[in-house]
Length: 439
Image (cartoon, rainbow, N blue to C red; front, top):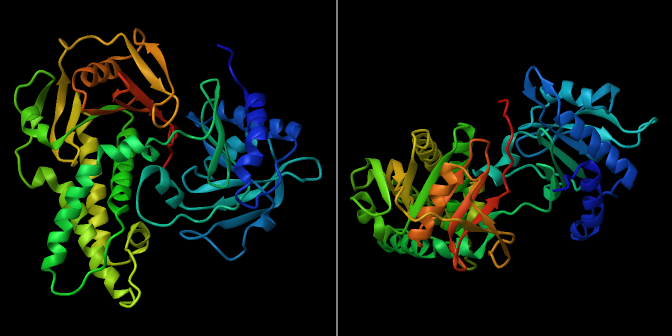
């Protein structure tokens, strides 16, 4: 394999910039030689360490005049300008990386310094921008349509236009925009019955309510599911232990909890409300939003209440329910630190943990790696060099074709595995980045 380096990422960004920037007014992309210099400097910084910790940082390419003077988190960007600009070098990025924490700040770089690019200061964004990746309520501050580089680990550089990924360099390869599995139609279809079930439960409550409630956007629970799953994955990755989630249809719940041909669960939970708490919380969110939404709606011109209402709500009950969902995510993430998989139904009902995928299941010698969201295009790969965690998930999905496995590697990689198109197929979920965090 020919490895890619900053020069190849610069060429990729230059080739795709016009198409991605066409939908919004954006700053002009730097010339190709300057672009190569910027990416190369960030790449070299990624190979350094600050107090034995790999360098991670975000770099914003714009003059400070592009940002407002009187703004700041949680809803805006707070710029702090150095009296004396610093040289744009890999070692200067290393020194500033701890002060400009990856999760909360960016390093501002002006490309038109008297002798080339200079570091003009720090831009504080707060952590809300992570919600789109890791799940959670709250609106993120708007990013200006300027080039941004994320240095996420050794040899890992992502190039963005504002919040939109254009290209990324990782493991010696250049990738295009992230493959966000949550945007796939098959993922939507996997949980359609569960969403319909929740809506039926919500309608039962609505019909019994003494006061009128608003109608809900049908997409609301999909968004809540998506962000809940993102939180769960992010929490597992934060342990740096790795783990496997096995999700099965609800009708298999009893079958899986008893001796079966596929899984042996060391710790099983009693059936009942406690292990089904996720569904209770989501239906409670739906009910409260519908109740609150009617108060804010013109009866003569009713509107659907949806995700934006959930994100922006300051109601204390909504905040408490959101915190409860967050805590459930962390509870389940903690279960993955015990050897074996965590097993849930697609209702997010927790059946048990410490599950061993039976070793006598047929070996899977090849799998299909999806190269698009729907798996219409894929490449068949041999499995001789994969680890135990992945190979066991492949064996399960080969035998249990209605299961979905989410495998999180110790290094933070996320892989969705299921039976599709006549193969065990996997998707490398690249909407989240991996790096050694410094909170």
